Image (cartoon, rainbow, N blue to C red; front, top):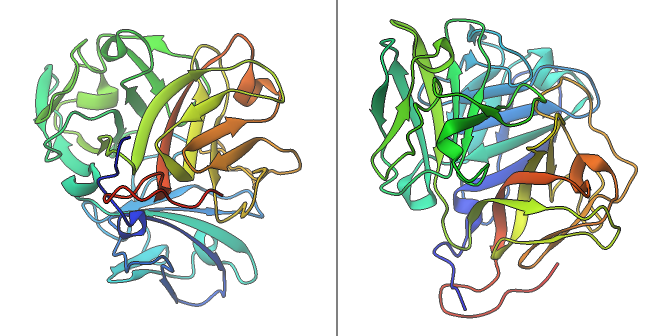
Length: 331
């Protein structure tokens, strides 16, 4: 039986729910461990607003929007600071309108949890970029900060040759073949490769890359084949998921994000879509979050198309088996 490498996932990932006040608001993450995040992704739940993505490498006031190709903006009233136990938001309506409800996903940048944030400047020629994971990334997201370009994604289970293909976080399109994104070269434990596309490597342009490597019992970046049944596919992760993002990769479909804070019991019925600005959707039973993975429950083609292949990223609420071999309690 595989033991976890991380007994307390809340030291590295947490979901925070809050209600806006319209005034500067310090928010404390409420997991078992204090978490000073390095990447915060905020979305208003009850309205159509920007997806707000901020990280500690670019700086607290530098914002990107996953639902579009907009350039990086400076907003002193969005995310104001990364704190030792959370973060502070200002008065920007995308993060803090009075009485509106919000969700914020928080990640800690550390090789221990398999997450790195890399800033680089393009040179227009295929090249390698160093990272600090000391492990091979399974998921990479890149964004051109200076120009209106898309959000290409590398996923190591996307196809049989994932370095030749890409998806886009801001788009619904199916897996697309291109040698100009990753130069047909898989990442290694020390570098990832970018090609000549302006999306990832235009001369003198600034970029940000988010890189994730799997950590047993804490994170999983995989794929599954669906069956279009209410007794849907079970996807093993090795932990009880706190967060899942998934997309059908062989057809044009939206991305979908689920978590255990907005849906506190099974079946999980609330989702947001990172490629649109729309409000949270709910009303059907989509999946169960279980002690060792997740199980599809809906026949809808967004998650469970009989002819569909899907990729996902998941992070743990708790490991299936602790580092000392003790099974954890099922959901």
